[in-house]
Image 1: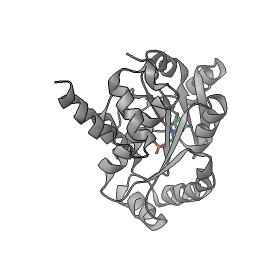
Image 2 (image 1 turned 30 degrees about the horizontal axis):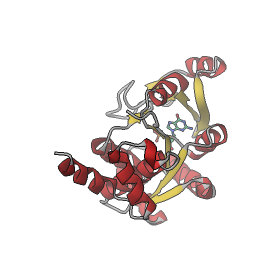
Image 3 (image 1 turned 90 degrees about the vertical axis):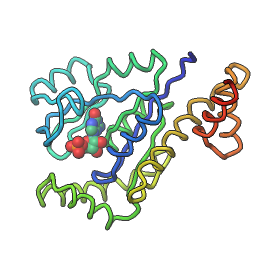
Image 4 (image 1 turned 180 degrees about the vertical axis):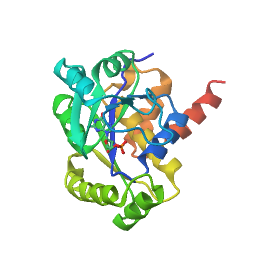
Length: 226
Ligand code: 5GP
């Protein structure tokens, strides 16, 4: 196995649908997810250790002081952070690791790990964003307004991202596939073709022609090597 896992940062406004997109992505290929720590209350249906590590402010601050967080921010009145050790381990095992984090944390990661791939997922319009937030109905009106304000501020940083992917309504699978193609092409672009087994070499070729279709390439190879 080639050890060239990528650190992939996915951000998007609250209500962008990035959660569903990531679920589709995990069905599509082998990615590892970095479970964040947070001091916010769990929402209905969220599980400790799966969606987040839910912790008190005191415990969170102990972790930041001991350097156990790769990055952290205070967002909407709560702390959110990426535990360092699991991410470093998954990367050194050769996996691509997905961090689903907000803009400030993403830019901190970019400053420390310039090779990280930053992908921003956006709904097609602001009106659609507002509609999705209200539909979710897991937050108060005040919280929804705050999240919309934050999204306006965050949109100023989209230019810092490597990729912007529009998540059209009801097209989460397509969006996930776009993210997968970006991750695949980034994974192989710094490796010379001759170092690769033929499976990967084919993917490089399709990416080089600007027709990234990793899934088709994988399907082709499955038949080819039968
Ligand atoms: P939510 O409360 O809706 O789950 O998350 C609020 C925001 O925090 C989202 O934009 C999410 O991407 C971001 N977030 C979640 N975990 C982390 C983290 O570990 N670090 C940073 N910087 N942001 C995070």
